[in-house]
Amino acid sequence: MPTPSDNHGFDLDYEPGETWDYNDEFAALEERVPIVDDETDRDGYTPHGDSVFIARDTGDVYVGTGSAWTHLGNVAETTAPVTAYGAVGDGVTDDTRAIQNAIDDASYAVFFPEPEDAYLVSEPIEFGDGGRARHLRGSGAVTVRADPNGSWPAGAGVLNRPERTEWTPGHDLIVRDLSLDANGVADHALSISEAGADVNVVLDVTNVHGVRARSHGFAIHRPIVSRIATCRAQHNGGSGFFVTGHGTSTQFHTCYSLDNDGHGYDIDVMDYTGLVNCAADRTRRGYSLHGTEGRRSMALEIHHCGVEWPAEEAYYLEGVDNAHIVAPYVHDPSDDHPMLSFNAFARVTVSNFVSFVEPANAPVVSVNTNGETHTRYPDLIHVENSRFASIEGGDLDLRWVLSYYGLELEDDSQLAEYRVNGDLYCGGANGDGVIVRDRSTGEPYRITVDDGEVVADPAND
Image 1 (tube, one colour):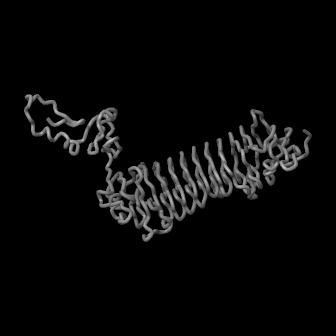
Image 2: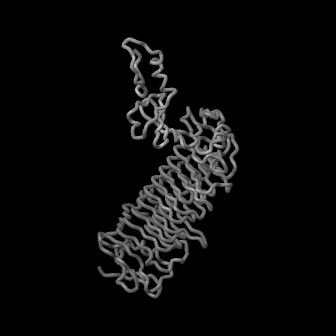
Image 3: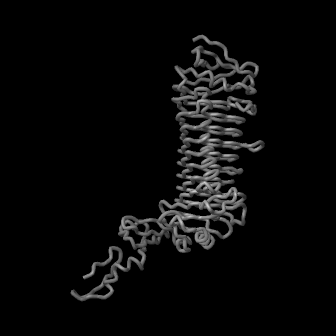
């Protein structure tokens, strides 16, 4: 007698030895009838290659691969696979029109099934404006590649959210699980303009790779309430991640920028923005955070982020108020640039910074080396719970402190505050000053402020 399906069966009272014709159809039911049950019961079903599971309590849809259930979408959404519109994904066929038609037609989301090679496109794929789909999702290792023989306007990306169009307030933009290969012809891998201008838009870019762009890998303008997570930018002609435009509340989490000609992360005129557990290797600067004249960036956080082999500064802040850098890591810094550089700023704190290798020809920390004197109260600069390779017995490398020269200091201002081995050291006009040691001669100096000037006087041990 035929064996019933693992997932479907009938409770029938039939006589022994009697054959029912539809018993032969049990296996075929896997292709025609989805399994409908609660999400929590999904693991109790066998993920045959032809099986479909619909969670009746969440609306999530899964397809069986033979060994596991793969999430396909949600029945509450309108998800259109690009292959249903004729996309091939063989790396040769031009899939531009098929993909664009799917995005133009879908009211919610477009899905990219895993292709044989890559989805080749000859012009920017536009999404997220007007009635176009706002969610683009891949399945595993899905590559969308720019055709070098295509038409690529200046400033556009392989995936492109064009400049200001008619948007419905309160919706979101999602791009997930895709590799965007600009192939040296598109300016950006992912370009999003006016991400949150004047409307409540949530931007979520997750597990997206942006590679081989002529300019920036990820170019995002004016994001508001946004998340960029587990993304990678590599081999781009500009910065790995470029975010600008009076935006706010944007978070980078566990992103990786490497082998880019520009900076790892170039963040310009952004407020309440943070980077957590990110890395930048073999870039110009690791992290470059800016404000502009009359519009400073505020409340920026960099937590547990690392830089290896930077060509210039590992961390560069200019025109920034209220920044906090926690547990930064720098490996093999540039010999000719400081590891941390602060310019035209206020209220910056560096915590838990331990350096084992320092620049040969530059200070570890540099302040206002570009000649700006906007910082009138250097007591708003704090380095705490930190240790540098040049510190011995609580002494601080003279070059580090002397990088404060050129500031307009007031007599009652505190020069710096930092902790070494649990002891607090501070310097100022009203204190005993900071004892530092000249690395080249070993001579100790006492750093104080006298009539607005930083003074280094020889000190007895």
